Image (cartoon, rainbow, N blue to C red):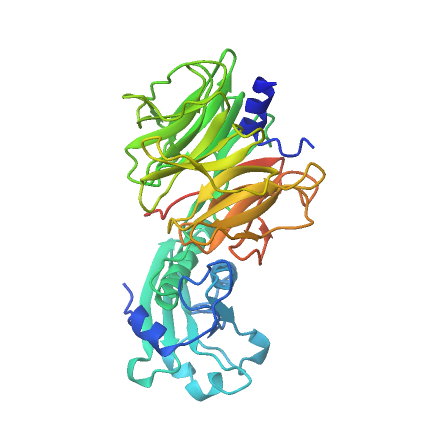
Length: 454
């Protein structure tokens, strides 16, 4: 029975049953707006922005296609930011808006449009490059109208064009969203069986540009990102051994890790990247939480209990606490302990089965999967550590498990069976704007990267 519990927790088998920038602070002081719930209030929510389509400076089929990609990606990034309300283009004045002389402020501030910002510009494709002249204007501030004015460039490919759109979107979100960077350039690691075995894949935050990180033709599980945005640790299962491996997401280079023996799984990086916490059965049939240097040396045991302790995750803000899952009370529940293994306390008291803790970047919230009764689905909840309140984010949509926070604290990704098979979805941290971002095969165990420098 104990081995079954370990496997259930391990596999997550809940289905068994340089722009010119204005001051972000000055804008925040000028705007007083209601905040949406579930702590997506990291910045100003609902700022109205107009985004007319960027225009091609010199039309040709390739430039037209890439500009169309740019326009779609920019719109989608801003629409999903959690801090902006995009004004429908059906309300825009007639015309093309590529240069400052094309913009008449009074046309965009009328009651019909009522925009506070406008993002506009033009594109040019030449010499194997796409160049985008991008501007963001503050329509309410005549003294400092141009908040961003920058030329972005990349290879004249769809991927290069997407990157340019992501860069501009992130700059806009950072400016308007209180100084917190946008997430359009982040990535998500996950597990997929699309090629016959469970391998670790990496994709852009919106599901594009997916590629396999591993090709073991065995089983790889529980990927987690190092804070540097390059290394990914994960569980690898092979005949006679279950242990941890670490690969570079850039070139798939393997980093040495000294596995402690036994069944070793569910790695978690410390906030500074120097340590790994994980669960291992090296000292008996039950898994316990250990911590070691990120190469596996200087091993220390943190938990001592006659139970399964698994799935550790660090408080990314302080590095002084670790949340984990244990069945010491009879069912799987979430506990927190100090990083030395002391002061263990349970955070969910209402019963049921609570698993998959994920700590938000501000250290104030833990997202988790909760099955309140044996006849109910698993759903995503967010536990506020200060108040003890649990906010339910998913409902009546299959099993929803393994939440992971985006670095902005405004978004979550998770696995869900709402479409009939396990797929990766993402949503705002109040449960709205749910997107399914994988389609092929069964896809589980998402892990959202920190900010990645290109």
